[in-house]
Each structure stands twice: as C-alpha cells, then as structure tokens.
Image (cartoon, rainbow, N blue to C red; front, side, top):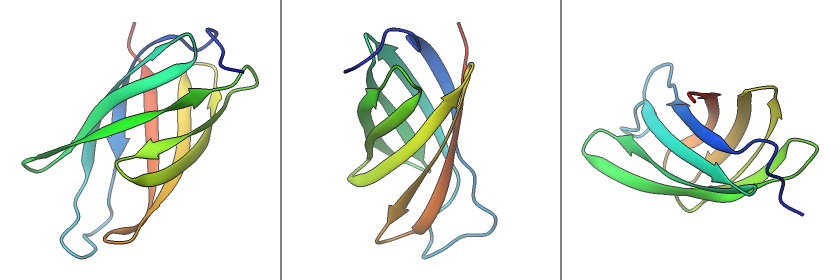
Length: 98
C-alpha cells in the first residue's frame, strides 16, 4: 500500500565514479504524491522517466528508466540501487527539497 508519509519534491541523482560504456552521472527531479513516485532524470542530452511506489515503512520499488530500482527512505533521504544492462549497477541518492 502506498504511503503519503514521503510525499514531496526530491532532487539528486546517480553519481558515477568513472564512466561505464559511456554512461555518466545523472541528475534527477522526483515528485511523490500519495506514495506514488514520478519524475525524470537526465544523463547528458537524454531524459528518462522515474516511477514507483514508496511504502509506509520507507521501502521503494520502481523503475529508473527501464531498470528495476529498489531502496529505502531514512527521514528525508532516499538511497537506492539499480542495475542497467548498458551501464551496469548504479546508486541513487535523493533528498527532499520542499
């Protein structure tokens, strides 16, 4: 069941330490409304969708583009991971901005 507990605006992205297959750092802007996650992230000149749900316990399941993403909220911070066929594994960090 989605939760409104984490509703708000978040910003952050997926830093890269070096590039894998030409994949660089990303910058994300995400909105959570009634526990439903929507937004986008940018990598260079490309924009991709972010979607998912935040459960009352802070667990998140979603998509970072077409890649499954999972993670957890701790207060106003989200930390998660995804695994991309093109770019390999990556981390996601988002912080509440409102």
